[in-house]
Image (cartoon, rainbow, N blue to C red):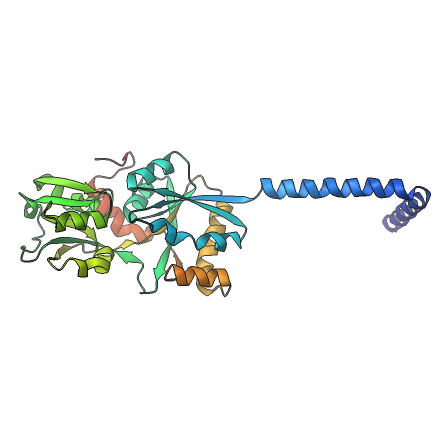
Length: 306
């Protein structure tokens, strides 16, 4: 009763004051409203969620393929900007320096980040083809002997591969090829490695099977002579261990929700990125990759160069 009585008194007091000096009160109220609106805007702006994501542009224009995610994240209250990198090492460097919050990464770099305990995986894309993994294949000119399963296979051979890729350099080192090969040519991408092989500069190339499947018709003189026996998560989004836990959970939920989201932004992402959506990804999905990386010599002190 006391609370209600006080409110009535307060309302009466204001009512009387308004009648006594109406213009003055209106001016004061308008000023207060402007200040309140400014404060609200400032608060919202200063607390807006921003996310910087690194993208390894291993093929010309690859980063453009992620642009549909910008308006989609925006519709969920997150401003995203992409930082394009020319190769895996460049991507690793900006991640290590804290210049980005997350990264869409191949499993080699992602797995290394997991081993170093500086980042964790959250989601990976499920393509319209139904695939979300890939593995290494060994390519050579048609008629070349098949990979024997022994590092001796590479004796006297020049090998090319994408640096720091689980289906490239990491796989090659995990099977001991670096100990026996005549020489090694580090390529900026799987595409470059295949081109290097096709020009006769190398004898074998180790590349992603998904990349090879896309362009193999352009290289009728090349064929698969060997293959990894396990699979690696494809295009995983890894987030910094320093990222706010609530933001990491929000990002994960937004991307997992993409698959069933009926919004126009979601439909655009699925259509233009040619995927069903994103699926939850944890360290468990990297079991094969982590074993491969450890065989290649990756430890917690690995500095991303051999």
